[in-house]
Length: 542
View 1 (cartoon, rainbow, N blue to C red):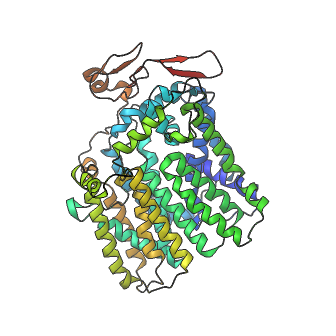
View 2 (view 1 turned 30 degrees about the vertical axis):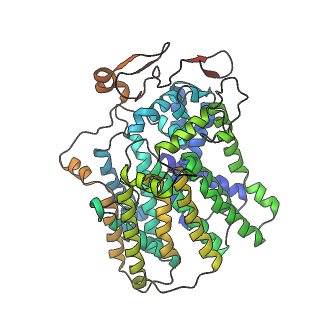
View 3 (view 1 turned 135 degrees about the horizontal axis):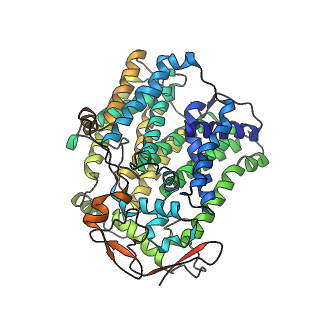
């Protein structure tokens, strides 16, 4: 509700900005489905700006932020008749009700203790620190997710951090349901059907299943979120390119969403290639004048300016850890440090390196397969083949324009190529796998089989049901306690494992490399000094 009110208000202001009449639909989607998404987008960027000057754990700030949505309540209306409808109950009770079961046995991801929670702790404790990457290199790879999560430390349980991921799953299924039930656009209906089949096939195959369909990640990881948002934007852009029909407001919204994907995870940057193709296609259609394009991109340019200033201040780079984008003129910046991190990230994800024998690289991937890469790859191929076969049963053939086919298939190929060189991990491939499967329906013709409406709801319900792990349902039956304890008070972390003196005034874990929320902890191999004698603190490594 908080982000819904925030987003609804932001959307209304954008319609005023574009001087267009407000519509109930936007990007082939109901505005009520998009409002929380834009609430997260706007609120997250507001937190980035605020953190330049104020710690996010400030109590006065928390009160102000909690009261902000009250100013939007004058436009909020509750329609009792609408709430009583089955469709509304299905959307806002059945789907989220099932997804919430995942909270009963969810745990922190390993990287939560490695750097996510620690970064959030720094955001809560301090305003922006110049050279923050010197405290720990992994802080440079954190995202807008850290800012959104840092304000959700409400309780002795950190369960609210999991709710962000749950929201994106809820959004995903609202979109699927809207495409599938309304049948307003045949190509979107086709996409919904093939994805529901894809989701069911996810439960079968080698090793018990998993074929690249979104899965509920442990807390603090955002790969599934990026995949879902990447898929949604890509589908919207491909349909807009196909139809060459766009409004000024939609350009503003699409540009903001594209940058939001990038803010969540740098690997989402490829969405801008499709966005560029989209802009070129509508520019050729003479839909708007050049000054309109410049004006409509002002909101995203403002957000981008804040983001890149933050990035340069904290890492010394426009894009971290891409060494070629870094500025070595800062006295706190250590020359060559970013290149080391760039090489390290490629090495740990076993990316392909030019000059390496491709067959040997494939053999090493198979031999050292972590995150079930080989299993998921084979299951994905098997699922695609099954859906291709079913395509001829459910859909008629359609001759698509060459530009539509080339753009769609070419963009998917480019994404798989990107994964090859920058990290062929299944969790990085969720978005492109969703898109690849979606194209089977998107490029097909009219549906040949009529599906009963109640059976449509049943398919969606079953898909959501199986997204949640069986262990979560067991936890519900046996009334298990939630695992997401506050790391600051966790006995296992602070006493059983504990910390030992390291370098200077810093400590490190007695076992492993997880600092959790301990601000005195670092895994840096050099002493760190934080100087606070100017507008901002500056972190140096000796």
